[in-house]
Amino acid sequence: MVLAEDAKLAPNPDITGDLIFQSFIWTAFMSLLLSGFLCLDKIYYRITRNRPKQITTHERYLKLIHTIETLLHTFSDQQLVSAISLLFTLNDQACTISAYDFNLVCTMLLISVVVHLNSLIMISDFIFKGKAIAFSRIVSIALQLTLTGIVFSARNTAIFPFEPQALAIMPAACFENTNATSSVGLADFANLASNITTNATLTATNSTGNGTETLWHNLEAATSTTHGLPEYIVLVIFVFFAVLTLLAEWIGTETGWNRHIGWGSIVVSITSTITSISLTGYAFSRYSALTKGMMVADLYQLAAVTPLTLSQLLPLTLLTSSLFPVINAVVGSLPTKSRRFANLLEQGEKTFEQGVKGYSSLESLQKWNSLAA
Image (cartoon, rainbow, N blue to C red; front, side, top):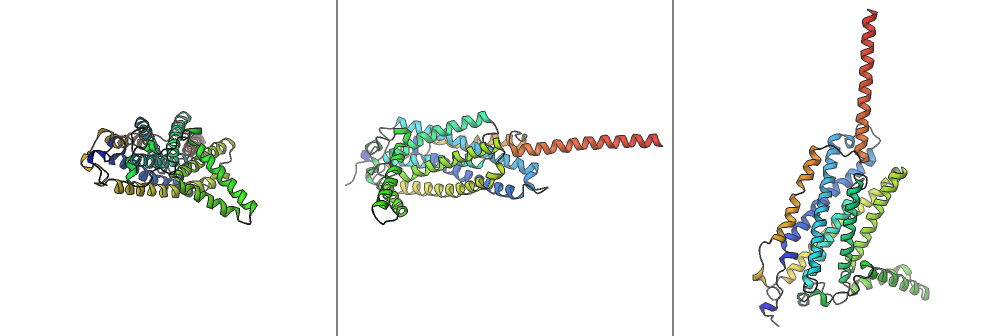
């Protein structure tokens, strides 16, 4: 059956325009590069921190680290503004947005989650550089992650058109999970965990089957009958490790146990980097598959595609605003509230005090020699 032109899916440039996705994906790629450098820095600093005259203690190197962390913060802030704007627009179009556009929104939200959680995990002293700013960032990110979880949960049905198909031109509301807002999106995840573990326990008890194999089989079966659930599970696991990292950093600083949790933090950072690369690649491939499968003459109003809109330009404009905090980080002074940067300041103060004492001793010696003469 051939659809009439007015029955085909119309473009929605204000929420899923090409430039909007490009701003999300390029931010993710750049944040991954920065995260990879910070991960290598953590490893090198951990290995060489007790050796004298290492590059990791030089002021220029620390200035570079501070600039990279500032840029990663800026990318996270940009994604926060873009994602929350996207969520509010999605709510405004809740009854009319197509399942295809809904899938694209979920892909962009997944990219945003990757950027946020990398900044939480990779930036050392995230909390202690400025507690008020860190608190506001964490609360804002938590709000976005909660709303993102609800959106992901809305696709947790067997009938949602997750892949490119004719049904995807219909409103997403026709297929959504009506319990998505229960327990702020965690109800489905809790029910899934309960069903999987209960069935695995019963099977292992009532037969000679292996409980671990049954658990894995039940997980595969549960995630294959609904759509979008794997992304939701990744979100919950990623958030768990981010919270664990922040708690470990806070406890380590308050108790002086940083030397005992350093390698644990590095393992989490490496895992986060590898997982983030995989998720970003998955998001890009999924976006490409969705657009290639749906933007065809039989389903899409190709003639109505507009080249540029204001809403598409705004995310790119937000990216350019990152130049200002980066310039400030380059030409400004290092933040003394960071433990690593504070150590450099303490070393500088000790060197200055030693120089003053040395100068005083030299002056006294010269006076004594003049008297003796």
